[in-house]
Structure formats: C-alpha cells, structure tokens
Amino acid sequence: MRKALSIIILISSVVSLPAQDFALPKGLSVGTMTDEFIDSLDVKNKLIINDYSMLGVTYGVNLSQVTWNPSQKQDMLILPNNIGISYTRYGKMFGYMPYFGFQIGFYYSQEGYQFEYNEDKDYTYKILGAEKAVYDVVEMPMYMHFHYDLWNFKIIANIGCYAGYRLAIHRYPGKTGNVNDDVKNSFVDTDRRMDYGLKGGLGFGLVFDPIEIHFQASYKYSLGSLYEPDHYSPYYYRYAYPSNITISAGVHFHISKRTGKTKAALKKEARDLVYGNKSSEYEN
Image (tube, rainbow, N blue to C red; front, top):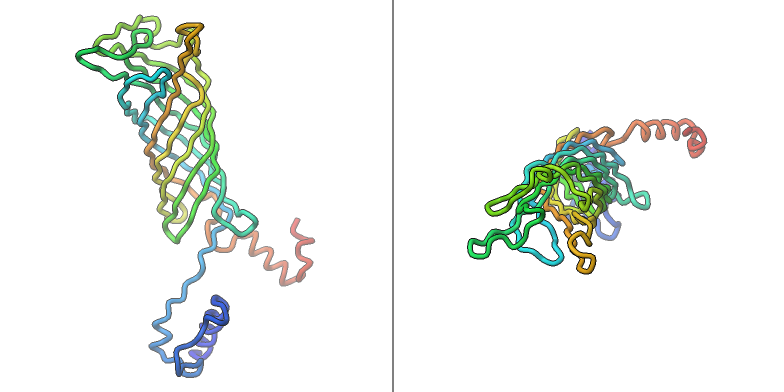
C-alpha cells in the first residue's frame, strides 16, 4: 500500500512540473521513500473555479459631492443610505481564464451637496435659497467584473456604467438660506431627474462556501447634470454633476457550485465512459 502511495505521489509530481525541473533528492527512489519523507510532503489540489453565479445584498455609506461648473466651495456630505441587490455571473475568457464575469444590480441610494460656510463671507452659493440638498435616487449599474480567487479569499474589481432616476429632493436652508415651502421637497421645471454615468470599484472578499462577504470602495461619476444648464442665463451655462465614493459590505449567496465538479461535468464524464469521443452527440 505504501509503495502504491509513493508511486502516486511521484507521478503527480512529474505531471505537475516540467520534466527537466523535477528530480528526487539524491539517493532517493520510489522504492526507498521513507515514512518521514512521505509525511513531510504537502500535496494540494489545484483550485479550479467553475462558471458560477451569485445573488447578493449590499449596504453602504455614500460620501457625496457635486462637480460644479463654475466651481463652488463645498463640504463632503455623508449619507448612510445605500442598499441594493445584485446578480453576478462568472465565466472564463478563451475557455480557461477564470478571472472575468459580469454583474448587474438595483440600488436605492441618497446623494447631494452641502455648500461650504464661511462666517466672514456667508455661503459661497445657493440654489433656490438652499445651502444643502439631498436626493433620493434609484440606479441600475452594469459592470465588467474581475476576480482573482484563493481558497477562502478573493480580490475583486468592477468597472462599468449605470442608469438612474432621482425620485425626490429635500432642500435645507442652512444658517443663512431661505427655501420656499413649495420647493423644499419638490422638483422645479429646470431640474433634471434622469441620471446616467460611470461607476467602478475595488475590494476583497472572504469566502465561506456557500456564501461570500465582499468589502468594496467604489466611485460613481454622473454625466447627468442636476439641472438645465441654461436655467440661470441663456448665455452662461452652469453644470452640476454628482459624484459619490461608496464604502460598502455585501453578502453574496452561491446559486451554483463554486469549486469541484458540477453535475453537468459528472454527466459528461459518464457519457464519455459509455460513448467515448462521441458523447458530445448526446449532450442535448
């Protein structure tokens, strides 16, 4: 039995290494492998990632600002309301590179702006008397998803685009503002509610099959201005593009097998044993 185990270990080593790089220690052969030598070997299975899928639930905090043109002084607005669900599908590029996939989600979030206050100069800018505004938004991001997996750890990255809609607005007067009641919680004709832009992020995941816990930092840049550019003057256009940094954590549930042989692979092996190379004729 031990001799058979020794032969298996030797064959596995030869297969996994180029022939010119493999050599047993001097004076050691298959027949002379000792118990101590065999016990010292660390034989590990190769991690093979399937084309699996996940459903996830995510919660995050937004650090929100707006890119103004002309530029305006502002403070960072922290909004702890970013929740959503996502679907992730992994695949292999060229049939053997298991680092890619796509992800689509649906999120409810808040974003907005807060102008900077200066005791000597008052606020630098106001919109309809508001020195602060918070938007309730929904958005659907679509990502190219990259991942590098170890047994219980993974590195992840997303890059893509999103489409969104501004559901509601809440305007605040601050210390020196004066917001009319009819626009405190309602849009005006010059506001834009449709939104779209670019989104991406980096993070890592902890894998405890059949769940994964992902931690990410993502950045969103809107290409949809908050208002019509000629609302202030038909000659001098103004733009306002929201941007968010989101720190999030999510729990993702495997809905197909992450590692090991899938049922489809086992069925194919069984067909190969019965039909040989003709098994592909019977796959459907």
